[in-house]
Structure formats: C-alpha cells, structure tokens
Image (cartoon, rainbow, N blue to C red):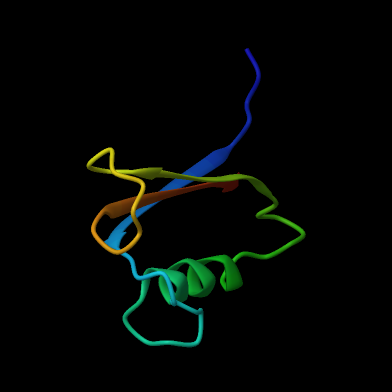
Length: 72
C-alpha cells in the first residue's frame, strides 16, 4: 500500500464577495495564512477545493468549506 503522508485541513466560514487576504478575520486571510505556513519543499500542496455548506452558491449568504490537502 502506498504511503502518501498527507495532511487535510478544512476551514469553514461565512464569506463576503469582496474578501482579500490582507483583511483580518476573513476566510481569505485564514486560508492565506495557513498556506503561507507550508514549506514548499516538504508540504507540497496537492489540492485546494471549496464547497458551499447550505447548497446556495451565493458568497454573501452561505458558509463555505475550503479543503487544503498537502504533503506532510
């Protein structure tokens, strides 16, 4: 069996359509801060994906899941 040695991080938050990664207390900043902690030689990102929690793809009313999978 293969040993992929991966780590999965799931972040959940309400989002606004004008979020940027420099704004405190936003999902954009949380995701950016987490990615910035990864070492590009040992924590290669395999996947980043998103899904809407309530099934409504409206960034101003729904909660968003961000899933980051990287090597550990």
